[in-house]
Image 1 (cartoon, rainbow, N blue to C red):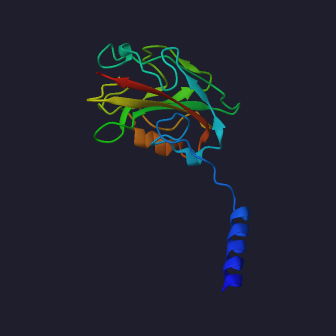
Image 2 (image 1 turned 45 degrees about the vertical axis):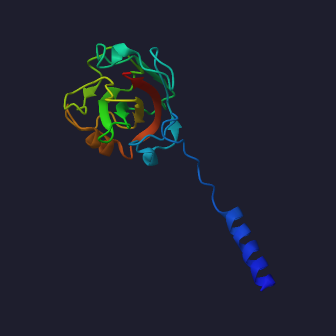
Image 3 (image 1 turned 90 degrees about the horizontal axis):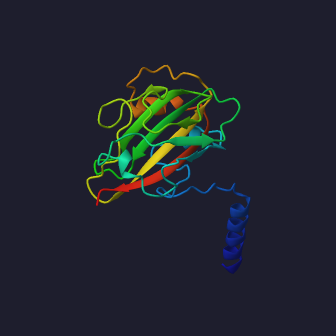
Length: 193
């Protein structure tokens, strides 16, 4: 019996040592690329660095960009796009909304030479439909508590997703599957209290 147990333990150790390593993931809400609706499995592994002149990673989003202010879009910048990038897509979500993930901004077919979006920008590629059923940006407006707002940017290998203005987040996410060269995210927070 002792020999059987020792053999079993040695076999398990060898199997574990020979198994391929599993890449760690970043827990939700701590930035990085693991976001609730990010099709990361289709990415070739490139990383974009997404920043804003208005707030830093994990910091509070200024009131002017919320429903308590002017509900204008914050400025965004990104770097690290591969040379073969043909376009970008932007999806901003609130994963903490009471009724499930709420979409705040969808933009796609953003030209490859655009690597920043100015504050309050209206014409950013093609505007998709947000959770308020309007095209373009809608600001943070949590009913209670502090919510996370994840600004996902995707570098794509195609210039057009062949979608019309007003496309939903689901339609855009389905269209970018298999076309993601790199991606990045910036997480901000907002609370109305």
